Image (cartoon, one colour):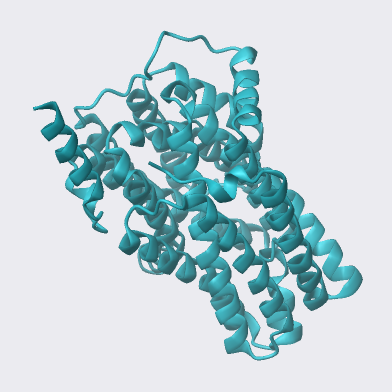
Length: 418
Protein backbone atom coordinates (compact mmCIF):
# COMPACT_ATOMS: atom_id res chain seq x y z
CA UNK A 1 0.00 0.00 0.00
CA UNK A 2 2.79 2.43 0.91
CA UNK A 3 4.56 1.68 -2.39
CA UNK A 4 1.35 2.45 -4.30
CA UNK A 5 1.01 5.71 -2.41
CA UNK A 6 4.56 6.69 -3.26
CA UNK A 7 3.99 5.88 -6.94
CA UNK A 8 0.78 7.95 -6.99
CA UNK A 9 2.55 10.91 -5.40
CA UNK A 10 5.40 10.64 -7.89
CA UNK A 11 2.93 10.54 -10.77
CA UNK A 12 1.09 13.59 -9.42
CA UNK A 13 4.36 15.50 -9.13
CA UNK A 14 5.12 14.77 -12.79
CA UNK A 15 1.76 16.06 -14.04
CA UNK A 16 2.38 19.25 -16.08
CA UNK A 17 1.27 22.43 -14.31
CA UNK A 18 -1.31 24.25 -16.40
CA UNK A 19 -1.12 28.07 -16.65
CA UNK A 20 -4.32 28.49 -14.62
CA UNK A 21 -3.61 25.64 -12.15
CA UNK A 22 -3.38 27.78 -9.01
CA UNK A 23 -6.62 29.60 -9.80
CA UNK A 24 -8.48 26.28 -9.48
CA UNK A 25 -7.51 26.36 -5.79
CA UNK A 26 -10.26 28.22 -3.90
CA UNK A 27 -7.98 29.71 -1.25
CA UNK A 28 -5.42 30.98 -3.73
CA UNK A 29 -8.08 32.34 -6.10
CA UNK A 30 -9.45 34.48 -3.28
CA UNK A 31 -6.10 36.06 -2.43
CA UNK A 32 -5.39 36.49 -6.16
CA UNK A 33 -8.69 38.36 -6.61
CA UNK A 34 -7.90 40.50 -3.56
CA UNK A 35 -4.43 41.26 -4.93
CA UNK A 36 -5.86 42.21 -8.33
CA UNK A 37 -8.37 44.67 -6.87
CA UNK A 38 -5.97 46.24 -4.37
CA UNK A 39 -3.18 46.54 -6.99
CA UNK A 40 -5.46 48.35 -9.42
CA UNK A 41 -6.71 50.64 -6.65
CA UNK A 42 -3.22 51.43 -5.36
CA UNK A 43 -1.76 52.16 -8.82
CA UNK A 44 -4.79 54.28 -9.73
CA UNK A 45 -4.24 56.35 -6.59
CA UNK A 46 -0.55 56.86 -7.36
CA UNK A 47 -1.32 58.09 -10.88
CA UNK A 48 -4.16 60.33 -9.65
CA UNK A 49 -1.85 61.77 -6.96
CA UNK A 50 0.78 62.64 -9.58
CA UNK A 51 -1.79 64.21 -11.89
CA UNK A 52 -3.25 66.33 -9.09
CA UNK A 53 0.16 67.46 -7.78
CA UNK A 54 1.11 68.74 -11.24
CA UNK A 55 -2.32 70.34 -11.66
CA UNK A 56 -1.91 72.17 -8.33
CA UNK A 57 1.77 73.12 -8.59
CA UNK A 58 2.93 72.88 -12.20
CA UNK A 59 6.27 71.78 -10.74
CA UNK A 60 8.26 68.77 -11.93
CA UNK A 61 10.30 68.99 -8.71
CA UNK A 62 7.16 68.50 -6.63
CA UNK A 63 6.29 65.51 -8.83
CA UNK A 64 9.67 64.07 -7.88
CA UNK A 65 8.95 64.68 -4.20
CA UNK A 66 5.63 62.86 -4.55
CA UNK A 67 7.44 59.86 -6.00
CA UNK A 68 9.97 60.07 -3.17
CA UNK A 69 7.25 59.99 -0.49
CA UNK A 70 5.62 57.04 -2.26
CA UNK A 71 8.90 55.04 -2.15
CA UNK A 72 10.31 56.11 1.24
CA UNK A 73 8.22 53.79 3.51
CA UNK A 74 9.42 50.68 1.64
CA UNK A 75 13.00 51.46 2.62
CA UNK A 76 12.28 52.68 6.16
CA UNK A 77 9.71 50.13 7.33
CA UNK A 78 10.28 47.17 5.00
CA UNK A 79 12.28 44.98 7.39
CA UNK A 80 9.99 45.67 10.34
CA UNK A 81 6.96 44.78 8.20
CA UNK A 82 8.56 41.43 7.41
CA UNK A 83 8.97 40.70 11.13
CA UNK A 84 5.27 41.42 11.72
CA UNK A 85 4.34 38.98 8.94
CA UNK A 86 6.33 36.26 10.75
CA UNK A 87 4.75 37.01 14.14
CA UNK A 88 1.06 37.86 13.59
CA UNK A 89 -1.79 36.27 11.67
CA UNK A 90 -1.10 37.10 8.00
CA UNK A 91 -4.76 37.13 6.96
CA UNK A 92 -5.53 39.63 9.70
CA UNK A 93 -2.59 41.83 8.65
CA UNK A 94 -3.82 41.90 5.06
CA UNK A 95 -7.37 42.82 6.07
CA UNK A 96 -6.20 45.54 8.49
CA UNK A 97 -3.95 47.14 5.87
CA UNK A 98 -6.75 47.09 3.28
CA UNK A 99 -9.11 48.68 5.80
CA UNK A 100 -6.55 51.40 6.52
CA UNK A 101 -6.23 52.10 2.78
CA UNK A 102 -9.76 53.54 2.92
CA UNK A 103 -8.56 56.43 5.11
CA UNK A 104 -6.26 58.26 2.63
CA UNK A 105 -8.62 57.54 -0.29
CA UNK A 106 -11.65 59.05 1.44
CA UNK A 107 -9.55 61.93 2.80
CA UNK A 108 -8.33 62.78 -0.71
CA UNK A 109 -11.89 62.60 -2.04
CA UNK A 110 -13.25 64.94 0.66
CA UNK A 111 -10.37 67.46 0.40
CA UNK A 112 -10.73 67.52 -3.39
CA UNK A 113 -14.53 67.87 -3.28
CA UNK A 114 -14.32 70.79 -0.82
CA UNK A 115 -11.57 72.54 -2.79
CA UNK A 116 -9.27 72.67 0.23
CA UNK A 117 -6.64 70.20 -0.94
CA UNK A 118 -3.00 71.30 -0.95
CA UNK A 119 0.12 69.61 -2.28
CA UNK A 120 1.32 68.85 1.26
CA UNK A 121 -1.92 66.95 1.87
CA UNK A 122 -1.06 64.66 -1.05
CA UNK A 123 2.50 64.20 0.26
CA UNK A 124 1.19 63.18 3.67
CA UNK A 125 -1.53 60.86 2.35
CA UNK A 126 0.86 59.32 -0.22
CA UNK A 127 3.21 58.57 2.67
CA UNK A 128 0.33 56.91 4.55
CA UNK A 129 -0.76 54.90 1.48
CA UNK A 130 2.73 53.50 0.92
CA UNK A 131 3.30 52.81 4.62
CA UNK A 132 0.12 50.76 4.81
CA UNK A 133 1.08 48.93 1.60
CA UNK A 134 4.50 48.09 3.04
CA UNK A 135 2.96 46.31 6.02
CA UNK A 136 0.55 44.29 3.89
CA UNK A 137 2.93 43.15 1.16
CA UNK A 138 5.14 40.66 3.10
CA UNK A 139 2.05 38.97 4.55
CA UNK A 140 0.60 38.51 1.04
CA UNK A 141 3.74 36.86 -0.28
CA UNK A 142 4.37 34.76 2.84
CA UNK A 143 0.89 33.22 2.95
CA UNK A 144 0.90 31.87 -0.63
CA UNK A 145 3.15 28.78 -0.06
CA UNK A 146 0.59 27.52 2.47
CA UNK A 147 -2.27 27.79 -0.05
CA UNK A 148 -0.95 25.73 -2.99
CA UNK A 149 1.06 22.51 -3.48
CA UNK A 150 4.81 23.05 -3.88
CA UNK A 151 4.63 22.01 -7.55
CA UNK A 152 2.27 24.97 -8.16
CA UNK A 153 4.20 27.57 -6.16
CA UNK A 154 5.99 29.10 -9.14
CA UNK A 155 2.68 29.16 -11.02
CA UNK A 156 0.99 30.98 -8.13
CA UNK A 157 3.79 33.53 -7.71
CA UNK A 158 3.93 34.11 -11.47
CA UNK A 159 0.20 34.83 -11.52
CA UNK A 160 0.68 37.33 -8.68
CA UNK A 161 3.53 39.08 -10.49
CA UNK A 162 1.53 39.10 -13.74
CA UNK A 163 -1.34 40.72 -11.85
CA UNK A 164 1.01 43.43 -10.57
CA UNK A 165 2.49 44.06 -14.03
CA UNK A 166 -0.98 44.17 -15.55
CA UNK A 167 -2.06 46.76 -13.00
CA UNK A 168 1.00 48.88 -13.84
CA UNK A 169 -0.04 48.79 -17.49
CA UNK A 170 -3.82 49.24 -17.13
CA UNK A 171 -4.26 51.38 -14.00
CA UNK A 172 -2.79 54.60 -15.52
CA UNK A 173 -5.20 54.24 -18.46
CA UNK A 174 -8.17 53.57 -16.15
CA UNK A 175 -7.22 56.47 -13.87
CA UNK A 176 -6.84 58.85 -16.83
CA UNK A 177 -10.26 57.93 -18.25
CA UNK A 178 -11.93 58.26 -14.83
CA UNK A 179 -10.33 61.66 -14.17
CA UNK A 180 -11.54 62.95 -17.55
CA UNK A 181 -15.08 61.54 -17.28
CA UNK A 182 -16.03 61.63 -13.58
CA UNK A 183 -13.42 63.95 -12.04
CA UNK A 184 -10.74 63.62 -9.37
CA UNK A 185 -13.03 63.37 -6.32
CA UNK A 186 -15.06 60.47 -7.73
CA UNK A 187 -11.89 58.75 -8.93
CA UNK A 188 -10.60 58.76 -5.34
CA UNK A 189 -14.00 57.53 -4.14
CA UNK A 190 -14.02 54.61 -6.60
CA UNK A 191 -10.45 53.84 -5.58
CA UNK A 192 -11.60 53.44 -1.96
CA UNK A 193 -14.59 51.27 -2.95
CA UNK A 194 -12.30 48.74 -4.71
CA UNK A 195 -10.71 47.83 -1.36
CA UNK A 196 -14.05 46.61 0.05
CA UNK A 197 -14.42 43.49 -2.15
CA UNK A 198 -10.66 42.97 -1.74
CA UNK A 199 -11.22 42.69 2.03
CA UNK A 200 -14.25 40.43 1.60
CA UNK A 201 -12.17 38.02 -0.49
CA UNK A 202 -9.57 37.65 2.29
CA UNK A 203 -12.23 37.27 4.98
CA UNK A 204 -13.80 34.47 2.89
CA UNK A 205 -10.62 32.37 3.04
CA UNK A 206 -10.79 29.26 5.22
CA UNK A 207 -7.03 28.67 5.42
CA UNK A 208 -5.19 29.77 8.53
CA UNK A 209 -3.03 32.84 8.27
CA UNK A 210 -1.00 32.07 11.39
CA UNK A 211 2.75 31.45 10.88
CA UNK A 212 3.89 27.93 11.65
CA UNK A 213 6.03 27.11 14.70
CA UNK A 214 6.20 28.63 18.15
CA UNK A 215 4.97 32.13 18.94
CA UNK A 216 7.61 34.79 18.30
CA UNK A 217 8.03 38.38 19.43
CA UNK A 218 8.64 41.57 17.49
CA UNK A 219 12.23 42.60 18.21
CA UNK A 220 15.46 43.85 16.70
CA UNK A 221 16.76 40.31 17.09
CA UNK A 222 14.10 39.11 14.63
CA UNK A 223 15.45 41.50 11.98
CA UNK A 224 19.02 40.34 12.64
CA UNK A 225 17.86 36.72 12.30
CA UNK A 226 16.54 37.58 8.84
CA UNK A 227 19.95 38.88 7.73
CA UNK A 228 21.71 35.86 9.23
CA UNK A 229 19.37 33.50 7.40
CA UNK A 230 20.11 35.20 4.06
CA UNK A 231 23.86 35.03 4.72
CA UNK A 232 23.82 31.34 5.61
CA UNK A 233 21.50 30.31 2.75
CA UNK A 234 24.01 30.85 -0.06
CA UNK A 235 21.57 30.38 -2.93
CA UNK A 236 19.29 33.11 -1.60
CA UNK A 237 22.33 35.31 -0.94
CA UNK A 238 23.46 34.87 -4.55
CA UNK A 239 20.00 35.88 -5.80
CA UNK A 240 20.04 39.04 -3.70
CA UNK A 241 23.55 39.93 -4.89
CA UNK A 242 22.58 39.21 -8.49
CA UNK A 243 19.59 41.54 -8.30
CA UNK A 244 21.56 44.21 -6.43
CA UNK A 245 24.46 44.21 -8.90
CA UNK A 246 22.40 44.06 -12.08
CA UNK A 247 20.01 46.83 -11.00
CA UNK A 248 22.79 49.04 -9.66
CA UNK A 249 24.56 49.24 -13.03
CA UNK A 250 21.57 48.62 -15.31
CA UNK A 251 18.69 50.78 -14.04
CA UNK A 252 17.62 52.34 -17.31
CA UNK A 253 14.18 53.85 -16.58
CA UNK A 254 15.35 57.31 -15.31
CA UNK A 255 17.17 58.03 -18.58
CA UNK A 256 14.38 57.00 -20.96
CA UNK A 257 13.44 60.70 -21.50
CA UNK A 258 16.97 61.30 -22.85
CA UNK A 259 16.47 58.60 -25.48
CA UNK A 260 12.99 59.86 -26.35
CA UNK A 261 14.18 63.45 -26.88
CA UNK A 262 17.82 63.23 -27.99
CA UNK A 263 18.18 59.80 -29.65
CA UNK A 264 14.79 58.92 -31.15
CA UNK A 265 13.18 62.40 -31.24
CA UNK A 266 9.70 60.97 -30.59
CA UNK A 267 8.36 63.42 -28.00
CA UNK A 268 5.97 62.67 -25.14
CA UNK A 269 3.97 60.02 -27.00
CA UNK A 270 7.12 58.06 -27.78
CA UNK A 271 8.29 58.42 -24.18
CA UNK A 272 5.00 56.94 -22.99
CA UNK A 273 5.55 53.98 -25.32
CA UNK A 274 9.09 53.49 -23.96
CA UNK A 275 7.74 53.40 -20.40
CA UNK A 276 4.94 50.99 -21.37
CA UNK A 277 7.14 48.55 -23.32
CA UNK A 278 8.81 46.97 -20.22
CA UNK A 279 5.38 46.23 -18.72
CA UNK A 280 4.29 44.56 -21.97
CA UNK A 281 7.51 42.53 -21.97
CA UNK A 282 7.00 41.61 -18.32
CA UNK A 283 3.50 40.30 -19.00
CA UNK A 284 4.85 38.25 -21.91
CA UNK A 285 7.65 36.88 -19.72
CA UNK A 286 5.15 35.89 -17.04
CA UNK A 287 2.95 34.25 -19.67
CA UNK A 288 5.91 32.17 -20.88
CA UNK A 289 6.58 30.98 -17.33
CA UNK A 290 2.90 30.07 -16.89
CA UNK A 291 3.01 28.01 -20.09
CA UNK A 292 6.28 26.34 -19.07
CA UNK A 293 4.83 25.04 -15.79
CA UNK A 294 7.17 24.14 -12.92
CA UNK A 295 10.73 24.63 -14.20
CA UNK A 296 13.23 22.59 -12.18
CA UNK A 297 16.49 24.33 -13.22
CA UNK A 298 15.50 27.59 -11.57
CA UNK A 299 19.06 28.60 -10.73
CA UNK A 300 20.28 28.29 -14.32
CA UNK A 301 17.22 30.14 -15.62
CA UNK A 302 17.75 33.16 -13.37
CA UNK A 303 21.43 33.38 -14.43
CA UNK A 304 20.55 33.16 -18.13
CA UNK A 305 17.79 35.77 -17.68
CA UNK A 306 20.26 38.14 -16.02
CA UNK A 307 22.74 37.68 -18.87
CA UNK A 308 20.04 38.44 -21.44
CA UNK A 309 19.10 41.50 -19.36
CA UNK A 310 22.71 42.71 -19.64
CA UNK A 311 22.76 42.04 -23.37
CA UNK A 312 19.49 43.92 -23.85
CA UNK A 313 21.00 46.97 -22.16
CA UNK A 314 23.67 47.00 -24.86
CA UNK A 315 21.04 46.57 -27.59
CA UNK A 316 19.14 49.56 -26.25
CA UNK A 317 22.35 51.58 -25.97
CA UNK A 318 23.23 51.10 -29.66
CA UNK A 319 19.64 51.52 -30.90
CA UNK A 320 19.13 54.44 -33.26
CA UNK A 321 15.72 53.34 -34.54
CA UNK A 322 12.71 53.80 -32.29
CA UNK A 323 11.27 50.35 -33.06
CA UNK A 324 14.55 48.73 -32.05
CA UNK A 325 14.58 50.71 -28.82
CA UNK A 326 11.04 49.54 -28.03
CA UNK A 327 12.09 45.95 -28.70
CA UNK A 328 15.13 46.31 -26.43
CA UNK A 329 13.22 47.73 -23.45
CA UNK A 330 10.51 45.12 -24.02
CA UNK A 331 13.15 42.38 -23.66
CA UNK A 332 14.46 44.13 -20.55
CA UNK A 333 10.98 43.91 -19.04
CA UNK A 334 10.60 40.28 -20.10
CA UNK A 335 13.91 39.12 -18.63
CA UNK A 336 13.38 41.14 -15.47
CA UNK A 337 9.95 39.55 -14.94
CA UNK A 338 11.39 36.05 -15.32
CA UNK A 339 14.22 36.88 -12.92
CA UNK A 340 11.86 38.40 -10.32
CA UNK A 341 9.49 35.43 -10.49
CA UNK A 342 12.25 32.85 -10.11
CA UNK A 343 13.85 34.84 -7.30
CA UNK A 344 10.56 35.09 -5.40
CA UNK A 345 9.86 31.38 -5.94
CA UNK A 346 13.28 30.17 -4.81
CA UNK A 347 13.23 32.40 -1.71
CA UNK A 348 9.82 31.00 -0.74
CA UNK A 349 10.91 27.40 -1.42
CA UNK A 350 14.10 27.66 0.64
CA UNK A 351 12.69 29.74 3.50
CA UNK A 352 10.94 28.02 6.43
CA UNK A 353 7.45 29.36 7.07
CA UNK A 354 8.68 31.20 10.17
CA UNK A 355 11.11 33.22 8.00
CA UNK A 356 9.03 33.89 4.87
CA UNK A 357 7.76 37.31 5.91
CA UNK A 358 11.25 38.62 6.58
CA UNK A 359 12.67 37.05 3.42
CA UNK A 360 9.89 38.62 1.33
CA UNK A 361 10.39 42.03 2.90
CA UNK A 362 14.16 41.87 2.32
CA UNK A 363 13.50 41.39 -1.40
CA UNK A 364 11.39 44.57 -1.42
CA UNK A 365 13.88 46.60 0.62
CA UNK A 366 16.77 45.49 -1.60
CA UNK A 367 14.77 46.36 -4.73
CA UNK A 368 13.68 49.81 -3.55
CA UNK A 369 17.11 50.75 -2.20
CA UNK A 370 18.89 49.53 -5.33
CA UNK A 371 16.44 51.38 -7.59
CA UNK A 372 17.19 54.62 -5.74
CA UNK A 373 20.97 54.12 -6.01
CA UNK A 374 20.69 52.87 -9.58
CA UNK A 375 18.73 55.97 -10.58
CA UNK A 376 21.50 58.23 -9.21
CA UNK A 377 24.23 56.23 -10.98
CA UNK A 378 22.30 56.14 -14.28
CA UNK A 379 21.72 59.89 -14.19
CA UNK A 380 25.35 60.67 -13.33
CA UNK A 381 26.73 58.29 -15.96
CA UNK A 382 24.41 59.69 -18.66
CA UNK A 383 25.54 63.23 -17.80
CA UNK A 384 29.23 62.30 -17.93
CA UNK A 385 29.46 59.98 -20.96
CA UNK A 386 26.03 60.22 -22.60
CA UNK A 387 22.98 57.96 -22.18
CA UNK A 388 23.89 55.40 -24.90
CA UNK A 389 27.43 54.97 -23.56
CA UNK A 390 26.10 54.74 -20.00
CA UNK A 391 23.96 51.75 -21.00
CA UNK A 392 26.82 50.11 -22.89
CA UNK A 393 29.04 50.43 -19.83
CA UNK A 394 26.19 49.18 -17.63
CA UNK A 395 25.76 46.17 -19.93
CA UNK A 396 29.42 45.18 -19.62
CA UNK A 397 29.43 45.60 -15.83
CA UNK A 398 26.13 43.70 -15.50
CA UNK A 399 27.45 40.67 -17.41
CA UNK A 400 30.69 40.71 -15.39
CA UNK A 401 28.71 40.82 -12.12
CA UNK A 402 26.42 37.94 -13.16
CA UNK A 403 29.33 35.74 -14.25
CA UNK A 404 31.31 36.66 -11.12
CA UNK A 405 28.51 35.75 -8.73
CA UNK A 406 27.86 32.50 -10.61
CA UNK A 407 31.55 31.62 -10.26
CA UNK A 408 31.86 32.58 -6.57
CA UNK A 409 28.58 30.90 -5.55
CA UNK A 410 28.29 27.92 -7.95
CA UNK A 411 25.34 26.51 -5.99
CA UNK A 412 23.11 29.00 -7.81
CA UNK A 413 23.74 27.55 -11.28
CA UNK A 414 23.33 23.99 -10.02
CA UNK A 415 20.16 24.65 -7.99
CA UNK A 416 17.12 22.55 -8.94
CA UNK A 417 13.81 22.57 -7.13
CA UNK A 418 12.30 19.24 -6.14
